[in-house]
Image 1 (tube, rainbow, N blue to C red):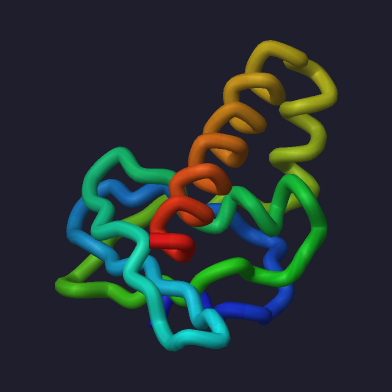
Image 2 (cartoon, rainbow, N blue to C red):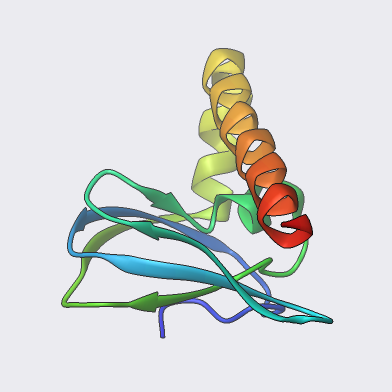
Length: 104
């Protein structure tokens, strides 16, 4: 288990090697949102919004990742509005994709 849905999120990970499964619980059951690998960013929604984790992330194999603490990300985003906009675009894209998968 990498992240558990509804836990607080104060770190974001960049997957360097390996694969993870991203799932969310809904009233109708568990919905698989994605399988992600090298280069994927996970945990960004909680770090940006301050909300609890929106999904459970499970390693499918050995995973190497680089962790970025929330306070360091906030400092970087304050210094670079373009990076903030890029990360926010990723969050928006993931939110739309999640809604589509849940609605079916």
